[in-house]
Length: 330
Image (cartoon, rainbow, N blue to C red; front, side):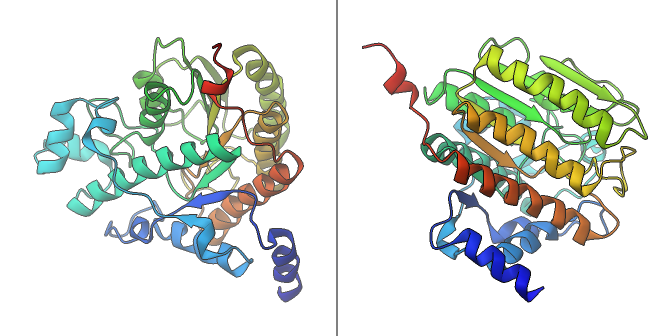
């Protein structure tokens, strides 16, 4: 183990090729005995420090202001979550214990993904050790998701004219139903979701492209589908930014899923998504999304592998993106 850590210290070097976004508050929310392991955020952070990353590589997010959240969510819903006046049905749909701390966590998560997107647009790549809450709809939350950081970030980058077109590549086990709904009909946002079909959410609103897999499908089927779609949609849509949900839950030992991807298969998934983007000069902001393996070490390993792939790719394709403003005709 010591030799492996020394190798990573050399690879990370004095200057890490991108920045992370992280808050210690992410894992301090009391959720009881819940399948969603919030402590994974702390474990990923501590593992990266052990591998040689420096504290200055980590940026601390601020809670998203109301005006950002309202780019996607309704004023009524935002008021209800802030005042603790959600109905019993709304609380049940969250499937996670509501608290003021959960609200702050959600606002920090939105702020964190926005910050990661900004840094990706500056440097080519950034990783948010958090985020990916794609089941939150404009007017309600679902499936552990209170606010949709991904949809807000896509809208925010476009509203600020930092990007003309944004692509969401959602490789979480579950279809991004909230994101698909929040961004439906927009010509400037492309949503791609590759997910297990025979699982939550039962109703799957249309993404721009939905790729469905079935229980038992593993590396071969998944990577074939991903490889058939990713290069094509990148070249056709040519986004200014990709928001990548690198979920750990397609893993074969995940408690909430039925896909059978190995850790090696998930690393190859990350390579396909990130390398194809950076080869074209497209910035990528990575968020962790889901992951519910019985052994939390497996989930953490998968997230760390995503970082390793990002680190290798960014060293090969380090060029900072050309800003939208610079590309705009004078």
